[in-house]
Image 1 (cartoon, rainbow over the protein chains, first blue to last red):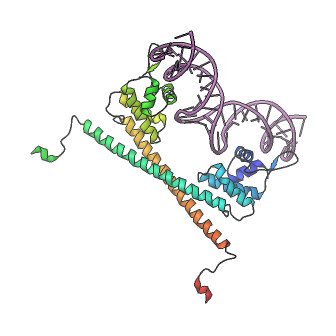
Image 2 (image 1 turned 45 degrees about the horizontal axis):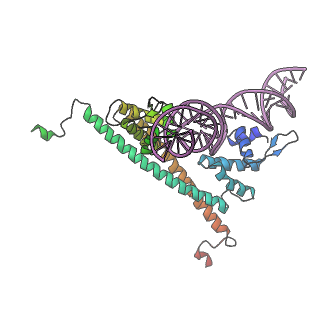
Length: 135
Length: 135
DNA sequence: GTAATCCTTGACGTCGGCGTCAAGGCAAGG
DNA sequence: CCTTGCCTTGACGCCGACGTCAAGGATTAC
């Protein structure tokens, strides 16, 4: 199949495929007329790439998986190098999620505080804090 | 004070300050010789910007806070526009953290599965799955 | 033959927030 | 006077993963 069909079947674009090839990730055979030619195996490699991309993996991080498949293994993650990428990614995710949780907490606290202060300002001077003050 | 001192006191660079000015975020007065001149208020504005940046806010998102301070309010988040930014950011964070959690779960599962399969491959053919098979 | 639809390579644009020169002006110490 | 160390503007570089356009060749449909 040619580049357009592969792109469509994988849900990506021809531009992306040419980019992958320029990075040495998904080289293509060439027909006599110079057109790129792909087969079903290439589709599988491409699907592996796209799956990992959707998970937020960098393009370079997908390379071990692609190499693994190309080496004849049943799955892209059947090789130690791929597992290492998984582990690194998990560690990165844990750090990132932790940071974002911390930020979320901080921003949430800031918002709560600022809303309280705004509340205290608006209704024409400081309000009574408690009914007991009426006594 | 001049740009170098302000940058140092705020823990940033002169390049960043010039960039903020180019974005209209932190304009500077000028001395007779053309040098940028800042005061303590500018330092406060800059600190507000940096705090939010550290939280992952875009520069544009810091603008309401800076405007709020410049309008004479005691805090950058004393204005409704700032609160809106807080709320939007919280919503964005929730979505992002949710996505990252989902990815973490998926990647974790993939890793566990791939490790199991690798385990089953290595020790020379499929291993006995259970001691009961010895009977 | 010609229009439509593929394909090719090459090259510049995008986005954010600056980093990093380059070329030159201004002020102060020795 | 000269050096040193600030400052000025301007402009290109960076990163990742492509988008988009340009100019032209190939194939197929009619």
